Length: 152
Ligand code: FES
Image: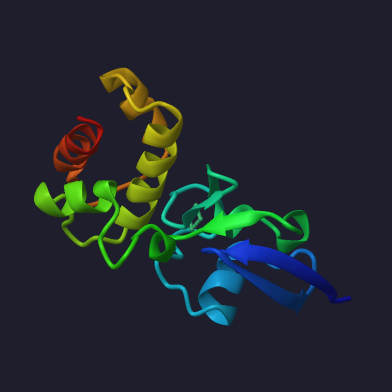
């Protein structure tokens, strides 16, 4: 059965009538047209779908809408301010951290979550925060360089 859920998505209150086990990723991509969060594995394993819920990085494919009433969700699309990229986005562009780019939504969102709670994150803390964000192209060195640039 469907229920009504209200949540803040990128600063706007939105209401949905959905089954409680609907994955947040489907709501964002299908109902909101927000394609920043990517569908990779759909199983909570790859990190391509990461968004912020109340500032913490979560896997949208493995988060049910029924757990999110009244919560605040930020997607990649919600990071820019006044049409300017977020400093983490800017750093990823400057370090040319993308190859195919599919993982970068998750890399960027996980980095924003990390640097918000720990602006002076050590190399080990950066690696730990990104350890479950998978990249199959192998641009890990550029990605780490981008995170360091955003931090410094
Ligand atoms: Fe969500 Fe892979 S698509 S973790």
